[in-house]
Length: 161
Image (cartoon, rainbow, N blue to C red; front, side, top):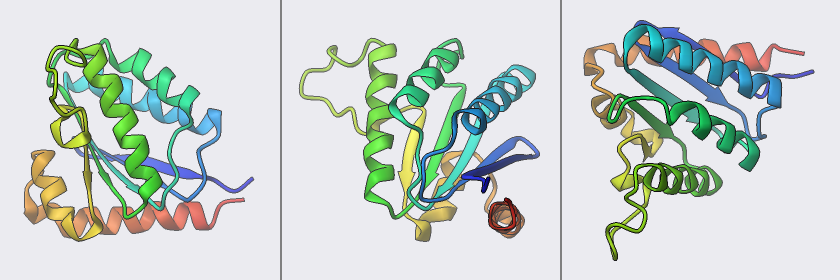
């Protein structure tokens, strides 16, 4: 079976690449387990998500939320890089879940619950990769290394199954 995602660590950064389809449950569970283990080992986590439009299903998002709600405040950040409208919708859903978990959902009437106000999830266009890395506290000098790693993960998906 062809993979729908590939991920790995690059120093303190977890990099995830999605294709256009949603991941299978085993793929998603392996990724979430890796994220939780990485966070436990480092007391924080930084994720770069590069997606063609694939995103976790509603059930997968809920399992993710159950796991990461144990993280300390402001210790996890995920920059989601995509041109996909669907990926933006999913990022909004994750942001709403985060706001609800933090008790901010109803606490700021009229406030935004979009990814721009999220402490965990932020959306970026592909042209804004450098800004995504800055939000993750990753130096711009690492951009070429990260681009090469993204290409390796994309090739791993392409050559699977």
